[in-house]
Length: 362
Image (cartoon, rainbow, N blue to C red):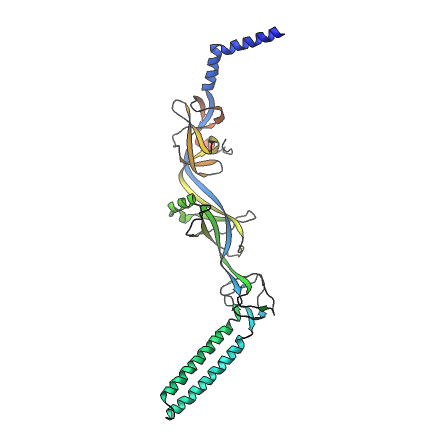
C-alpha cells in the first residue's frame, strides 16, 4: 500500500512537471472568457435626497403686552384666524385708571386754554399766557393719547392669517407683561430647510441657469409624496465648519394646510444631466476606498484603471473622469482576471446591458 501511494505521487509530480501541462495552465490563465461592454453616453435623471425640517413662513409667539387678568379668550386651539381678529383681551390693573386720569387732565387743560383765550380777546391777559396754556393743553392731550395706546395693548389681535396653537392660560388667569399666551402660524407657504454638502453647492451654483427648472419634491414621514412642487427660495450665507454643509431653503405652497410647523420629511431633487457618461456599477470594484474598472486594450489585455464618479444612480455610476465612450470595460468576470491578463471576451452592447441592471459593484 505504501509503495502504491508513493508511485501515485511520483506520477502526479511528473505529469505536473511536463511542458505540455504547464503550457496548458498558462494558456488557461491567459485566455479567460469574460463579458465586456462600453460606457454609454445619454441623458440621465439625477436624484438627490436630503432630510429636511418644515417651518411655517411666519411663526410667532403671541404674548401679553400688559399685566392683567385674561378677560376673554375669543379663539380655540387649532382655530384658523384672519388678520386683525381679536385673540385675547386683558383687563389691565393700572392702565385703565391711568387712561381715565390722563383724559381728565386733558379736559381740564382744554377748558383752561379756552377760558384764557377768551380773556386774551378781552385784553385781560397777555398773549404769552395764552401760548403757555396752549402748550400745557397739547402736553395733556399727548399724555392722554399715550395712555390710550397703552390701554389698547390689552387687546391682542392677529397680525396675519394663521392657525392658533395651544392656549397657555385660561380665562381669568393673571398674566404678566410679556408672558406667552399662544403661538400663531401662517401655513399658506412652508419653508423647508435642508443641508447641502459643499460639493453639491458648487455643482448647483455652476449650473444656476439650468437649475431654474429644478423639480423639487417633498416626501412626507408616511412615505407619500406631497402634492405640490417646490422651488429654491434661499441659500444661507455661511457654511457650517463642523460638517461642511450649507442650509438651503425650498418653498412649498400649502393650499390645503396639510403641512404644519415642525414636521420633518425628505427633499427629493430631480435634475436632467445631458450627455452623461454612465457605466454599470457591477463593472467596478473597490480597493482601499478607490474605485477601479478593467479596461481592455486593442490587444485584448486587461488593465486596471482608477475612475471617479459624480453621481450614483440605482445601478449606474455617472463618470466624472477615467473613461471615455470608446473604452471597452470588463462587465462580468472581474474576479477571474488580474492586471495585465490577456482575455477573451463576449462583447455586449451598452443598450442591451442597461435592460438587465440589477446588480451592484463587486
